Length: 555
Image (cartoon, rainbow, N blue to C red):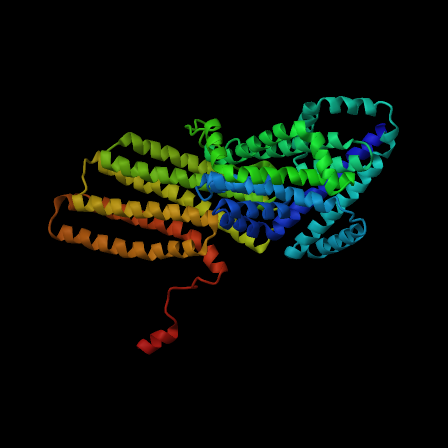
C-alpha cells in the first residue's frame, strides 16, 4: 500500500509539474496578446464569455484569467457584469483542455516529449519557439503522468479496505464534494484534479456517481485560489471571483440531488467512463453559463451586498497586489505589478488634489499630509522595483518585455512626480500660506485649469497603461503639445497682468510660474507612458528637429 501511494503521489507531482510547464510556456509565448484579448473582448457579456473561454483554454488557468479581470475591474476598464460573464466562459475553457487530455493521445506522447525538449533546449532564450517547446514538453509530461497514475492504482482494485472507504463517500456526497474542493484548492488546479479522477475511474477504482460528486467539488475548489489572491483588493475587484463562487454553489446545490439522473443522461452521449467524467464536467459548466449569462446583472448586485464599498483602513504603504506566487507566470505577475502601479497613481492624484485644496484654503496641516503621502509612494515604488526585478529572472517575449518596461517606466515617473510634489509644489504652497499671499482671480483660474488638465492626463495615462490602446496613446502624446500651448498663453497673460501692475500677480509671480512649470513637468511624465506603445507600432518620431536638408532649403 505504501508503494502504491508513493507512485500515485509521484504521478500527481508529474501531472502538476507538466501543467506548470504548459501554463508558463503559453503565458510567455502569448501572454501579452491574451491579456489584450480580454481587454478588448469584455465590451458586452457575450463577447466577454467567449474571450474568457478562449483565453482560459489557452492559459489553462481560470485563476490567471480571474486576476486579469479583477485588475481591469479595479480601474473601471471592465464592468463587474462583463467580468462575471468572462469567468463563466473561463470555467468552460478549462473543461475543453480536460476533453483533449482525456482522449487517447498515447501515440502523440513521444512526439510531444521529443519535440518539446528539442525546441526548449535550442531556443530557450531566443523567443516564442523556446516557450512553445516548454508548452509541448509539459503537455507530454501530463499525458505521461496520467498513464503513470492509471498503472499505479491497479493494485488498489484488490484492496479489502478501499470499498468500505468509498462506500462512506458514496453515502455522504457532501463530504466527497468538500474533500474534492480542498484537494483542488491545494493543487491549485481543477484540471489536474479532474484528470486525476478520470485516471481513477479508468482504473476501475472509483464508481461514476462518486466521480461526478468529486467533479462538482473540483468546480467549487477552483474558485478558492482566485478569491484568496484578490482578498486584499478593492470591493469591485473581489466581486468577480465571489460572484463566480456564488454561481458554483448554486449549481452544485441543484445538481447534487440529480447525480443519478446526470449519470444516465451522460451515459447516453458516451458510455466510456473516462468520457462520461469530462462530459459531465463540460456539461455542468455549459449549463451554468446558459442559465446565468442572462443573470449576470442580478449576480453582480448580490455580490455587491456581500462586498459593499468600505474605507480601507490597512497600512497604505504596504503593497496590496504584488502576489509572490505569481512570479513564475509573467502574464499574471506583470498584471499584479501594473495594479500596484495604478494604485500609486491614485495616491499621486490624491496628493495633487490635496495640494490644490491646501493652496485654496491656506491649510498648512494638509500640506504635511501630502508630504507624508510621498513616503507611501516611495515605499510602494521600492516594492514594485524589487518585485519586477524578480520577474526578469525568467525570459520574456518581446510584447511582455515592452509591457514590462512600460509598467516600470510609469512607476518610476510616478515616483518622480511624488518627489516633485513633495519638494517643490508643497514648498511653494507652504511659502504662499506663511507669507499670507493670494493669487489674483485670473491667476488662480489659470492654475485651476492647468491642474484639471494634468489630472485628466494622469487618468488617461492610467487607461493607456491598463489597455495598451493605440488611439488613447496617441491622444496622450497630443496632450503634451496641447499643454505647452496652454502654458505659453497663461504665461503671456501673467506677464500682461504684471505690466498692468496687478499687485496680487506681482506678489505671487514666482510661485505662480513655478507651479505652472511643475504641472507641465508632471504632464510630461504622464505622457511618456504612451511612448513604448507608439514606438513598438512605429508611430513615434525619433526627434522633433527638422532634417538638415529642410534647413538648407530654408537658408
